[in-house]
Length: 403
Image (cartoon, rainbow, N blue to C red; front, side, top):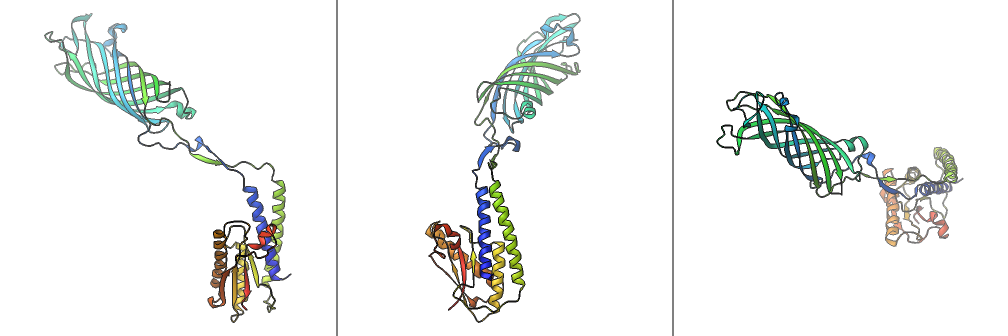
């Protein structure tokens, strides 16, 4: 078998194998969102909310237990502005007000009501107002996965704040509410049970416990060093701008229905290519024979459709051709780029012809062939001109001895 014929067969089989692989993989790819990949962060302007809530507080302290439970309830209210950083974590800040009813051991403590007593204790009543800040965790999204259309969400939170105490004067002269100049720190925790009624509006039940620094009397002595308040609120929340979260979009590659026949053909082609590679290796290992002049090209390098880059096998072929050229330094060669005229536009085919010829020339030069031996050109006709079924033979570079 002549080298040129062997090379042509190898290139044709390579092209056939590549075409089979392309046919097997040329399936329609669809795209879908995949929550398993996490969720995309929204813009800063999204996922903001405002919450207003009202309810009641229940005073809890060591001395307060002597007062009837039903007489320790007072109204409470809050307003917050917050933002969800992710489907699980959020922050909110706002103002909380709650009234408290308790007992004191003397008439000069904060909030003592004039003349109202329970046994040896004096009834107290005062208000706490101040800024608060919470860190929130949506347990439902964390444990059950995020769902944009879920109606119920359970959110736990912990936070802190500072309260300003407002009381009525204990001297009986002025019974208007005034700032008692008693600033307290608070730590709080609670759970929000929210029910979405629309994309932007949710109703909620907020159950909270607040631990508060102890009050002082007007003389400065501490009493009720630590006390607490159990609160319940009904609230309404309005969510601004984008309220949901988007999962990354990933491609979905469908399994082929039945590719056994194609795989068998590809395996046969691979075996044939391996045999041709072995023959080519043996051929290249032989001493270079004197080239007998004939009317055909020295060699033809074939390409897949739309490709101008040399494959690994074609690079080996061109290197072998370079060895022949360097043994004949006085001979000059013409490299002609071809493309089939059955596919692609004129501009695309013109570029393919030029790039194919120049790519072969560049590899020849890098393997020792003198630039003066090589001339590149293109031909806008069909190399084989055997019709559309033989277009694979028209995508090539021919290497011929210059006449």
